[in-house]
Image (tube, rainbow, N blue to C red):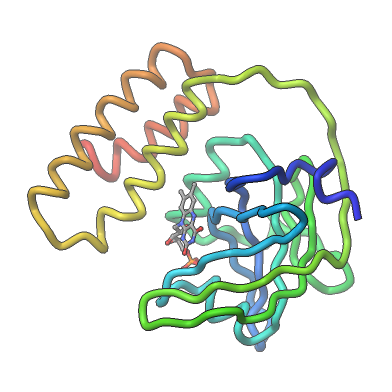
Length: 194
Ligand SMILES: Cc1cc2nc3c(=O)[nH]c(=O)nc-3n(C[C@H](O)[C@H](O)[C@H](O)COP(=O)(O)O)c2cc1C
């Protein structure tokens, strides 16, 4: 399967994971796919809809995109049905550059998180564009990760550090980002910096 060609490389690839519950409800969330040699894993923190859906249906789709707005919306909003299309009844993101549908098997479970081993079932590549590194995009991703941690961190000092860092990332987005990065950062700023 052309998983590497679809964009997943050694290390951690930030994608939008789409899943389906046993009752058929779709979900999307930003998640890191871990690649070690030819093995793929996810580490899912307890309490997420993604984890409960994967435990129910044993499948997930890794949707590769560099759309900063999609990342923050998937993290903080419910994506309605218009964002999804179906591959053999399973949700993928309509706007993904590529996607990989994985079979997921529980490899490790603790009270804090579960690790799942992923086996590719199907791959689709919709778009192949050359993209230079944009610091604004990287800054949005870092800010979005901090933003998803903020509500679970109880320590006030740590929360202040998160806000300080997010402001620094907002400056990078202002300087280096394009319209999608600026819109995404504005969404985060409305929620956390105002
Ligand atoms: C770029 C990025 C990567 C993330 N990677 C993970 C991850 O690997 N595992 C995880 O459990 N949460 C990860 N998160 C946090 C989840 O996206 C977040 O907890 C989300 O609210 C879960 O949504 P859900 O309840 O709809 O599944 C990540 C967030 C961002 C912004």
